[in-house]
Length: 218
Image 1 (cartoon, rainbow, N blue to C red):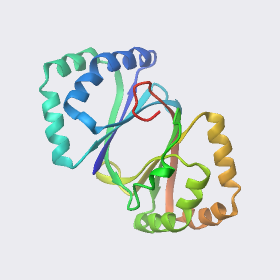
Image 2: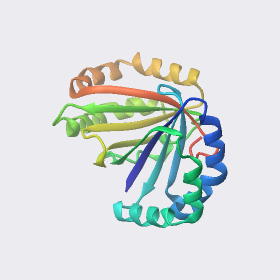
Image 3: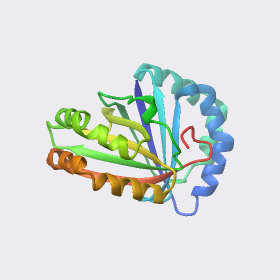
Image 4: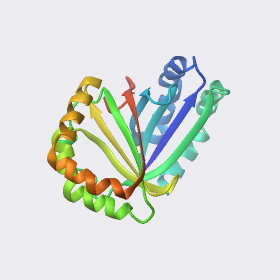
């Protein structure tokens, strides 16, 4: 499996109309051609504003190319794209793949995700494998115990920045996020794990997003 993670940044003042138009005119065409590829659609709440991030799952690069080629040839899709001309400051996509231990047990992937935390860590060169090994052995159980809803855990793929870890965590509210992460941060087991994990990383970033009304994850 591969995942196409797409992030679009719009000019200020356009986000609400863009979302409404996408739900009405863009998403139906995508569903017709991409089918069950649709994983999640988020709107940035804290971080870069006027931004959406969506995730699409494919069996392979060939599967992605085949589906998207059919979509690009659809006149309705071309018409929809024309409606968005001049709307974007930037459009970015990366192809990512599951972490070695993903998926985690289904029991740990349930719960509300009105908000999500998209976290992107960049490992120091040569340390990506060590990060995943350490996380699976010492970090994952603790994090799942406190946060619970892991929407996805991925790593760099064939397109986009290298040496990266992309993980997404769902919360019922921003207060829920603060409480769960505070409890995790106070856990001695997490503190011991973090001391070993942090030297493996070169950079850490995150953005808090909310699920769109039509997102499969919410």
